[in-house]
Structure formats: C-alpha cells, structure tokens
Length: 237
Image (cartoon, rainbow, N blue to C red):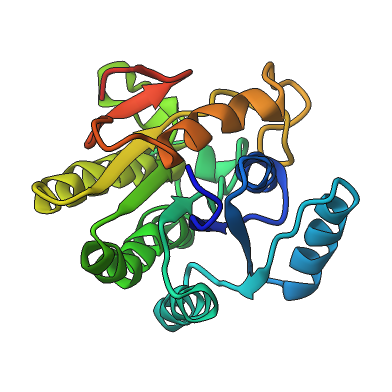
C-alpha cells in the first residue's frame, strides 16, 4: 500500500476501531477517525500523535444517513479519494436481562441493533461505493461476529446475533453487486476482545482483534471478496 491511500473507520475513537486506525497509520495510510462525539475523536487522535501518527477526525453517527454521507464526503473532499471503509461501529445492547432472550427482547433493542450494526454500514457503503467505483479501487471491511454465524447459531443475545447475521448478508450482496470492479467487500470476526464491549472476561488483545480487519483493508488486487474471515482465514457463514 502507498502513502496516498485514505481510510475511514467508523467508531474509530476507541477499542478495536482505534487500534485499526493505529495499525493502518503505521502502514502509511491516512486513517480518519469517525466518531459520534468529535471531542472523543480528538482525544483518540491525540493518543496517536504521541506515537507520531496523524489521524484526522470526522463527525460520524452511523445511525444517521445524512451523517454517514457527510462523513464520506468530508474525507473524500479533504483528500480527493476514499480507498478504505472499515465499518467498525457497533452496539451490544445487553448481556443480561430481558434483551438477552429471543422471547423477551424489546423492539427498541432490536431496532437500535439493526440501525447501528446493519443499517449504519449500509448507509456508509451507499455513500462510499460510488467514489470507489469511479476510482476503480476500494476495500470495504465489515466487522461482524461469530455470534452472527448461522452455521454455529445458538441462543441468547438475539438483537446482536440477528443484526450481525444481516451484516454478513449485506457483505455478500454488496460483493456480488460489485463483481467486475476492483472494490472488495468482506466480513471479519475479531473474536472475543478485551474492550469496553467485550468486557473483562474477554480472551483476546485488541491488537489481535484488529489484525484481520487491517489485512482485509490492504488486500492486493487478487485478494478475496465476499468472504468471512477470522485470523486471516475463511470461516463458515
């Protein structure tokens, strides 16, 4: 990858998103931090500056289609292109209580999960894909989860599971509709990572969680599209 590659990472101000920004920046890629709260985004950018890494910050609320369009337009306006989109922002409503069961999950939990985990990536893809098609280059990475795998689907956390399974469907559909272009679209599972969402019992470091996303974001022209990966290896849908 060359230094002129430009990326936008949603939810890039903390956790896996911030680590993805950091790893991309270390490769010489300009990775913009998409943050719902720009002050938190600036604080995250400041933490990278101590390492000599520069990351611009854009306001981005993935639940708002207008905000998604504006963020993509801002990044493309600043740099004249957008090469990489990492759909990292996501929510897990509750591990306990009524929302943890399919029989009791609330409509609000379902709607918020779909809006953030599925429709947010859709809004950003709709804004970014025309730019990528025009420049004949793009890498779109959707951060999904093993909890969204139909092949290993179990009970619990229905809003999160359903929204991530739908995100995988978005990946496959988008990749199919972009066949014949140099725009690649893939899903990945970071594993159970030690972040605010993952909680204290998580088993993986944030660096491990981000590595596959960075790999997919920097695929060569002969790399895969329409796949689901963990640790840089294909996994079942």
